[in-house]
Image (cartoon, rainbow, N blue to C red; front, side):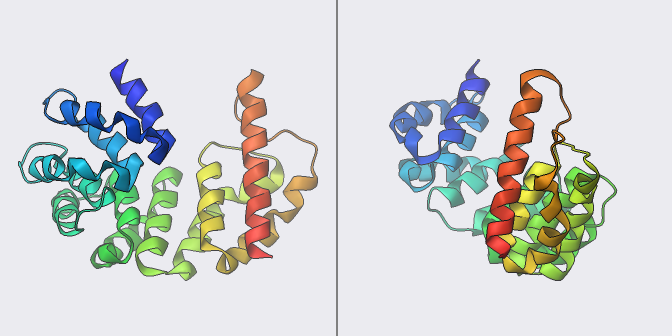
Length: 224
């Protein structure tokens, strides 16, 4: 129940700032601090009062310390603890998808991991490929690698096929902007089709179709 509530609050972003006092209490509890740190990261600068607690968690040497270090950065701290913690994760032989997203948040500060991220942008797993391609662009500006990697994931949209991984790929391509124009040109005709783009039946299929079509419209606008 608590984890579900925290995920919802994290999605609210800065609008959830009224919850910061309660989150501070959760940060002090070994059972709940990770959930609280994720919410504070979503809240951002309005969660600045949690900086000291997050910094203490990030340097504690415990599991998931990178979550605290990343949240510390998001609420207005320095990037150093997050880079150090994520470096320990990367040294273990691979960068998990959540860590790729955190490296993307760090932007150019995380450019020292570019070679490892670039290699992951060719991964066989589409979710990893998309996350790594986005992180590569966010940290280095390398669209020559990232745009083709993400385009390879969404190209089957032109045949009416849809997988959930395509939605974040389209949204990330939109963030790239004009350099993603080859993907936009490829996908331009998708919006004229009357086939629903979905991987699920029932009401969820309708929401999937609406979401990907809205994302495609945003991509075309960004590139045109």
